[in-house]
Length: 143
Image (cartoon, helix red, strand yellow):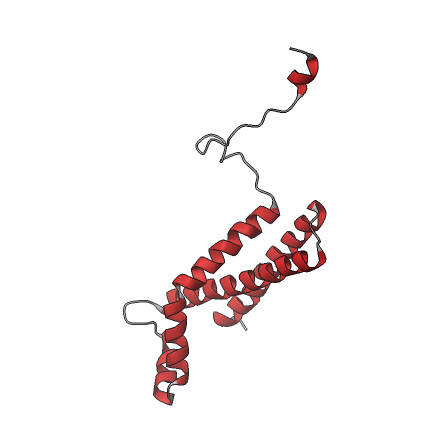
C-alpha cells in the first residue's frame, strides 16, 4: 500500500455499547433530538391538555377544580407532580416552537452553514430553557 491510502481517515459504524458513551453530539444534534422528543411529549400529553382546557373553561365550579389541581393535586397525584407535568408541557411547547422557527428560518434564507447551525442551536437551547425556567418559577409560586 502507498502512504496516502494509510493516512486517509477510516469511517466505521458506531458501536452502541462502546462508542455512545464517548460520542459528543453537536448542539444542532441535541436540538434535533429534543425537537422530536418535545413533539412526542406534546402528542402523548394531548389528552391531559384537552382535559385542562375543558375543566378551565366549562364553568366556575370546574375552574375551581382546575385551580385546585395545582394546589391540592388530582386524587392520589400530588400537586407538585401536576405542576411538574405542566412544566414539561411548557418546555415541550417552547422548545418545539423555537426549534421550528429555527428550521423555518434556515429553510427560507438557506442559512445552512456549520457556524449558523451551531449558534442557532445554542440560542434555541438557551431560549427554551430560560423561558421554561421563568414560567416554571411563576408556576411554582416563586414570584
